[in-house]
Length: 483
Image 1 (tube, rainbow, N blue to C red):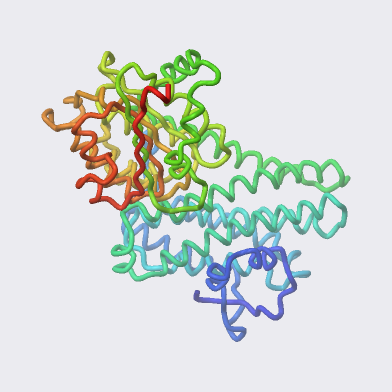
Image 2: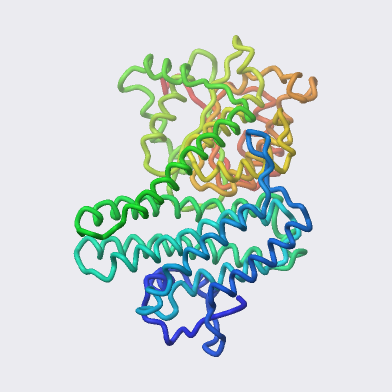
């Protein structure tokens, strides 16, 4: 990174301690020579002003809010300036006991602002993270100078929470520096359109969670230390957390409406109600199920196809398996129950919509990832078939331990003509797209159905079609002995 600080002159500040918690790959992003001059807020301000001028010339609009107002990229840059001003106001006291205070994040922020980014969407995604880190530097520098010079068990605990928060912020800066520091051509070649959002989302979600922990401790310290004058800081943190929660909920509602998934929870709960104790447990003991569901940190996608004749209680079996998977601490489960007598559940693309909406509800980091696709697709009102597969692959690449379940896939007999699908598209082409997309993810897929030729063609273990995909495949046929 450009710029630097005299590392040997630094005392082990909280930022320096946070750096030591990172993997070597991330630490290396902050390595500089001791001869380089120490970064100053004015250096960062100069980079902000230069980038603001560039954005104004480009007339970059980050997004249009729900009120129809254009939110310019320069508006977020102005927030960074405000946090820099705040840091300069409170930073003098910090520098007295830590001459290089917060040099690490400011150095990385300047580097990112100077990166050559010619795409508004990409720069905007990164800039939101930069603004958040700038806020953290300014806000908690003030907190350190007011509280952490005093020693108590609570302030020690608060210092530990701040180190964790700073570590998450540095993690974002390291990831962003690795990605955005590449040449434009290499960045485009290496990534999909949505990689920038995937770089930002996971570490910034950790930042938000860590800040909640800091907030709880600050409230306790406020009660413990008389005259600490933390009211403004407490109020500021509280407003940030509340604003983030409200913003995320509004974004989730908008994305949910765009995806348009339908809920088959009633079928799931009814099937569990009709389940008799002592039945269905056999399925989770199957070697095929054990291998498919094993928690072995495998990054390979897995497929399990369980099939049997009508009347063998497959739907109740599926509900029992879902309940078993939900009780495991790791990962999440998204499911769909097809029914031939319900027009809404006969379209295979309804499966994708429902899965994606469930993932959106269960994983907060997917809000930013899905929103990037929503914006990139021009905020189209109807999510098309191509958009559905884009979402499925992107989410499956970004989120670990996702499990998807379909019950009664043989009852999917109708392609929704109103959703921009070809009316004559056979069911097996959907399976082809599903497996082609699944092999790009780290997810598991369970399909429960009858054994019919077009499904067997793709899901049967060892069939010619199944060999075309890099997926670990398992299969089990239910017999009368099982039930």
